[in-house]
Length: 300
Image 1: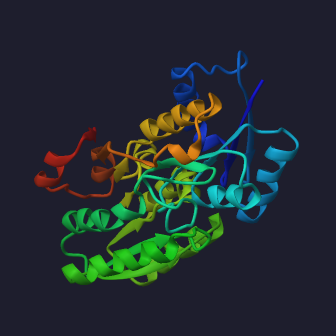
Image 2: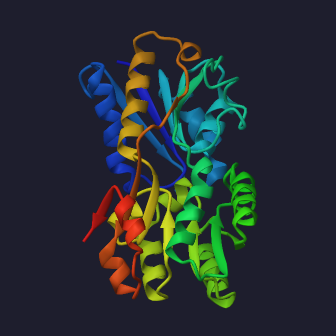
C-alpha cells in the first residue's frame, strides 16, 4: 500500500482540518486511507532544523511514495534530501525563487504543488490595514526569520509602504517567547496596527495572537482566516481548505503515475477578506463601511 508522507514545520493540532482537506482531495481521485493508501506524519514542532531528518525518515523508514510538505521550509528540506521521490507542496513562498522548480508552467524535476500567494499579498494586506487605521503613523509587520521568504516579505511591504507614505516597523519572531518580545517592542514603539506575515509557525499559533492583540487592543490583519475564526480581527488571503484539497488531488494524481514535472504549479484563485465585528467592538474599533462592503464574510 503506497504511503503519503506529510511533513510540517509546526505542531499537528492547528493543521488537523487542513490535513483533512488533503485527504478529501486524495479521496476525489480514489485514494482512501486504509483501503489503498496509508499516511505517515512528521511535525517539527517549530524546530526547523529537524525537517531534513524527518524528511529522510519518511523516505528511508516508511518508503513514502509521495511527500506533501506543509509550507516552504518543509518543501525545501524535502527537496534537499531527495531528487527522486515526488514532492507535492502547499506553500505561500515563490517556489521558483526558492529553487524548488524551474518555472510555474513546467516545474521539471520531482516537485510540483500549490502556491497560495501569501507573500505576494503582503502589500495588499498593508493597504487594507491602512484603510482600517488611516491615522496610524506607524504600522508594524511581524516576520519569521526562519522563513526563507522573510527578507522578501519585508522588502515588498517596505516598498508598498513607501509608495503610500506609510512608516513600517519590521519585527521578527520564530518562537513563542520571541512573539511576546515582538509585542513588547510593538507597544514600546507605539505602533498603531500589526500586519502578521504569512508563515506556517504563525498560522499554528492563533490563540496566542488573539490573546496578545486583545490584551493590548491591537488591530491586526492575518494572511488567513483561522486567526479570525479564533477571535482575530481581520484576514485576507487564499482559501486554505480549497488550497489543501487541491494539493491532495495533485498527490493522488502522482500516486496514479503522473510525473510531477508535467503538473504545472497551481496558484490559488480563491481569496477571501474576513472581518470579525465582535472583535472590533471588543477593542473599541469601528470598521469603515467601505471595508465591510468588500468583505467576503463578516463574523458577527
